[in-house]
Image (cartoon, rainbow, N blue to C red; front, side):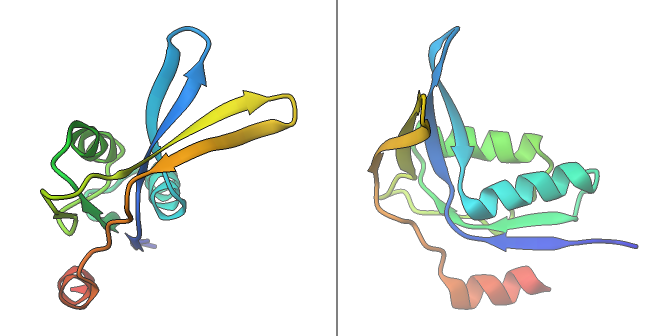
Length: 121
């Protein structure tokens, strides 16, 4: 049986504490995490997982594109808005668990009507 997923949403850069390096940067968000785990579970077939999102042209957006591609996620439906950046948030580890320290950046939303029609084919 073939499984396919089109995930739609926002991805954010996550700055987290790292004992070895001090800080590390990753990417997260409910829909992005779902796309990553789906790709991992289903062997990251070339057309199994697509992600519809909007990102900027900043270095973090470019790093996200590389990370998603490395996970086997198709970004052909991802839009670029050169006037905006992806959101950034930092998390810390405390005894009570992980806590979000702050969030910077406006949400980038894809132009849903035209993008969905194209992505769904």
